Image (cartoon, rainbow, N blue to C red):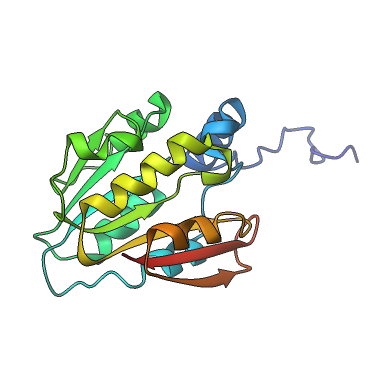
Length: 198
């Protein structure tokens, strides 16, 4: 019997890839330097990344490089109903995907993460959650992003970032007083998660 056919020679239809995953893959391959990944973050990575976010009080959260919104949705599912998330995303395909999230607590800004100061005052943000591919961002831009993230965070506020290697660990320590690192194998590729307090 020919593979893919039954005895009556009828075509067997196999399930197509999940639209969101396939969309991320196509967009990521076309824009690899700005996405820094070929697959959306796993549920395990997302859970570990946002686990410290409290749900018992309103929060002002900034998300940098939300991509297809897998982290964004998890944040919105977790946090207090009075919280607000502002996502900074420059990829037009991902911006369209993010606009499909129907939640009044989300604002999507089509601007780069290095423009944080134009939208937030000093010491006004509780958490910054970043999925930016730091290792692929030009150093001067990366430094500006970290400077501004530290500037907008409230005293005791936290900056979360994941990477696939530890190349920016020492750099993060230059900007934040305390930096702790955790790790998950349950992602493609496995990832390190930084938790930074300024």
